[in-house]
Picture (cartoon, rainbow, N blue to C red):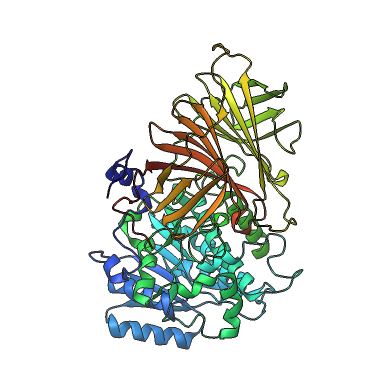
Length: 609
């Protein structure tokens, strides 16, 4: 199968190896993950250990010699689960203890008891929970799913954090679900007191809270050797979590996520595999803050109609801190920060948020402009000023936007996308629904400003993009290069190009540039495999072998700006918008290696649907 290639497959695998560092996959069992691992002398606490994933995880860990504290709500069910485990693992050391996660008093009593009798914990699995139930309240008046699934674990784990630090390196694993994709955490009304209750929204919110808790916990404790992971186990057939739900109860979920019915089901053995991988496997030593599924790092998938992958909001460190503060306020306790947490404005959900998907192959940002002020003469006979502060902020004035103020301050990302070509992303305040990218060619001092503006939410979907882009050329006032050097210009050079884009080992797209207004795409590998469409596009030539491609998506509110280094076969860019129904626009810094295809075939590692 003939095709052109700018980068060998082995090289790409080396660069993106952290996206799939294991040979495990969806079919892997817990026995296979734990092969050769001895847990003798270690102690793990498992909530919800009386059935399903919790019981099977306890059994698997005990089979490798670990002592297990089984946190259960029912003494009878807990003892029955322990007896079943001992039928399989006769020497299992099991300690059954009662806790009701829907009662903060019960959680506090449980945590005090464990702390008084246990010198340390090698790991905690926060697994217990309820799913899509009728409206109910906890003993403390919280909506039951948010209260039991999230707040109970938030309090329990934080109170036991000293035991994790005592056994560092240690790990926390918090269970989530693909249902986190249904609803982010509502910071203003998490308990549905001022809006109608919806069982699936409430469940989705609690599962998003689980993921955000793990993310924030990892950021606060990693310097002490305690790391945290989020695990989405998939659809498990052998649990009782969903047995109370009728087909009528499931109907709204199937409408919102039509493909959920087609997701492969898993056995308990396969469902527990990712859990024990996260909790004990040495391949993850030194890592944390990751969202895991199918024994691998989950990829960002912002389309809420699809049932797998991780929503961007679940990887937003700033949002995680906001949910942490909300949780502290609700449980009435504060927990000291153990490690410096990056400020939200300097580290939005960009590269860190999507490291397992669209940004794995992105080049590192640079601080080469810090301390400099650029004055740019625009083709509109106006002037733009870009002042790069030493703290990573950008003070700007006169940006040629669509609805911008005259000046402002915002976070900024700068990356050398091609030799002497900088991509500057001004991360403007979300409430303005506008962002600005600047491509600066330092060899000619020419600049291209690309403003992207998103229409208001109330504008109906019309099968055309709701994103407007404006292109404005400029040149540095201090330029010493000849004035006759070519300025950026629209181009037809890329029309007809067909290429494979490798954002990571596990995320591969094909793009075809159809004409001066449209391009087509399809996802060849990744959680959105099979997704395809046609969106609006624009093409600009910066200089020989360096181009800018922008697109404006139709089905989701997303715009993107990419700089193409044709010699290096590399694209570097930023996507921006509100994919997945996010409440406000976010930035996603991206990068990919590409291979131009000269014939109708595909690389050998691509399997078409």
